[in-house]
Length: 126
Image (cartoon, rainbow, N blue to C red; front, side, top):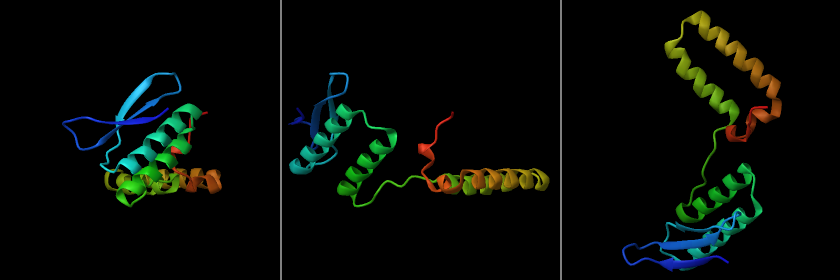
């Protein structure tokens, strides 16, 4: 069962929960609001017990971040990463090399189809 504690030399609540391996873990919630800290640590424990996938963990952490800071954690999509990478390479590669890069990345993005709009962290090597 998740719990909270408060250390004397910090203003933030410390969340205590048991991970999926049965180990008791303590982490700062990064908030001084007890109710918010309680919700955060309960979500951590739920995530640890269910062994969430990476995508699920990213959603939970993004939700927590939004509650605390008012903004979601954005993940770069594969298509956006390709564009950033090409922009970087345009400055350092010769024209012929850059054209080859652009052609290869366009073919790759076409091959990926709708998946190119997914966060890059969702992809794994087969």
